[in-house]
Image 1 (cartoon, rainbow, N blue to C red):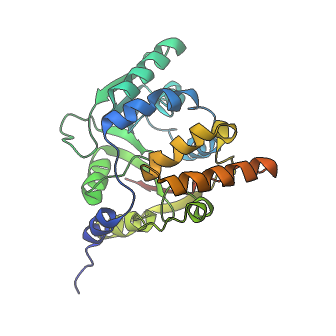
Image 2: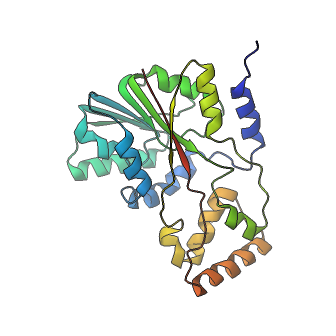
Length: 263
């Protein structure tokens, strides 16, 4: 029996998808905003409760950003190795660690899709919302090879990052991105039987952007790219209607799959 090549199917779907990868410069530009809200999220609380560090002394935080989980978990392990391809994110992480008096975090500038030969093997590996890669099987293999005890990762559930309601307002039809089911299928072909959970945080999808039309438009263009004039007008009408009705404007499809496995 021939095994279905889910990694190839993932690659084809990803290339066709309306969702495109952001480079390190784009994430540099988001670093300050992300740093302001790294502790304010039901998603963070849920994931933190699921990661078992009871027998771990080292943690590898893949795509660490400004230190959302590195800072949280550092007091519970001997050493954290945190890597990201955004220099500004790592600068924020190092500044946060210094401010909090945390001295056991080592930051590493590295690309998830690059060379992992210098990345340390740790007891637990965490990859939170950072696996937007072209070769998913390679990334999953690297996560597995660098873990002694367990791997925890989160991956998108659904067609894309914006809510169906907002896409309807825009009149946009998107080509869906590959979602979490590809991860499970690729892991299965790798001989890994993973545990699946879901994170559907009931939080305001617009947060601080709900009272600021300009910030709201910027958040949409971050996901979709530049908007046409007609789309901008549609957003303005919708935004004003939401405020008139005291309703939070829809923004993100904030559903995530938590996939983990023991070694």
